[in-house]
Image 1 (spheres, helix red, strand yellow):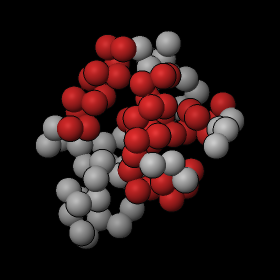
Image 2: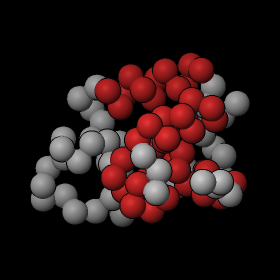
Image 3: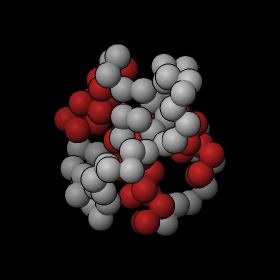
Length: 91
C-alpha cells in the first residue's frame, strides 16, 4: 500500500503516541505492527528509531491493546499536542 506524505506523517505521529495502539493504526491505514515498524525504521534517524523501539517495548507504552486498561475506549487524549507537519525527527 502506497501512503501519501500526509498519511505517512499521520502514521508516524500515531506510532509516537504512547496511548495509540497498533490496532488503531491497522484500523485506519490497514498496516500491521510489522509494517509500522518498517516505516518507522525507514523514516526515522537510527537513534530516534532505537529510542522509539525501546519505549514501545518498555512498560511505559500502551501500544498493544492487551496492555491498556479496558475502560479506555479512545485512541488519543483530547488535550494532546499535535505533532504533525514533520516536527518529528526524521532522516
